Length: 444
Ligand SMILES: NC(=O)c1ccc[n+]([C@@H]2O[C@H](COP(=O)([O-])OP(=O)(O)OC[C@H]3O[C@@H](n4cnc5c(N)ncnc54)[C@H](O)[C@@H]3O)[C@@H](O)[C@H]2O)c1
Image 1 (cartoon, rainbow, N blue to C red):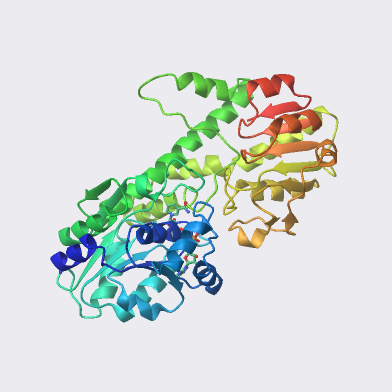
Image 2 (cartoon, rainbow, N blue to C red):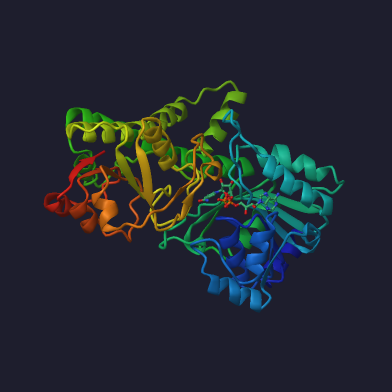
């Protein structure tokens, strides 16, 4: 079975199915299709499937022209009909892995996708899980499900885990030049999965098990959460000591070894860094282990929106203005620059807190036309907001402008020349801008 699948892959005759066409699944499917594999995307969202089949991309890093060309040449299609899973030789699961309200892993999307596979599992298929999850999911959850069909691992099917490392909005690193870690439940599974990915990725790193691959992904994201937590703590410490945090980090980063710069910010957002470490700490707790770094990082990072609101309040106070009824304009609400994703964005919590103190909050974000609190996966709530144009009147009529996301296309010079008070949480305003600014600037 291994040799047969390897041959299909080498000849690019393996048909690739991707379940879940979001930020991870769509670029992956497009990459396989562009490299000569027939690709089918499986979605529960009819609208997404329809848009793909019409040659329209809804993911910023995937140009519609690329999708259109692959759809027109019949290399790629999307469907909501899961019966076509039976036609695929390799099936890759890229569905969401959120947290429950209790901050416990919610693997229900993985289970739903696996259930669809199980109904059609046949001899000769390779199944790969890409969704970020706790170590053991592939062996302990997926394998028993698939074995219930009576089919046997290695003889009939193969099973592996390969974490996704996509970095939305980063034009330097795309699917093909981000090294890929692959760990199979068996050696055969590792071998074939690594062979498949090597068709679209320059550098594939095989590991000894699915658990190692699952844990490696969580280490990467926990490493970021912890180090950002350290940078955020340093920022608050420097604020208290009246030292320029950014200058401190810049100076430390001149050390050519043993230091890696991380930067403070208004809090962490997105579908990965705020959530993934909980998958690791949950699994650790099952084994009686308390992962203290993860809890501490979460505590520090989740307090950043509160600190930002304190900076706004301090800034207004210096001008003898109360927070109540003040006009506050957020510049950027996406969770990071140059992308259109607000999931877990700290902007939501900042708005919630500002509103609770009676401020009139508006926002401008070239990527986010409307901000609905119910779509954003946060505890914040309230009336939806619409992005307002960045007119001269808007800028000069605001009491305080808060740079939450440092989108590249904003004319910061103009912003500095019209606004009276700016809280810059991203160090978006460089030294020269700050020196020549009409606005009073408070930085993290
Ligand atoms: N977004 C990132 O930057 C990123 C980076 C690395 C890893 N990841 C991980 O990759 C996984 C997917 O994340 P994403 O950002 O692509 O999520 P997403 O929400 O953008 O996309 C998931 C897609 O899956 C679809 N879906 C849900 N259940 C389904 C089912 N049963 N069958 C078919 N489709 C289904 C949804 O409609 C959605 O389109 C998560 O585990 C995430 O942690 C994400």
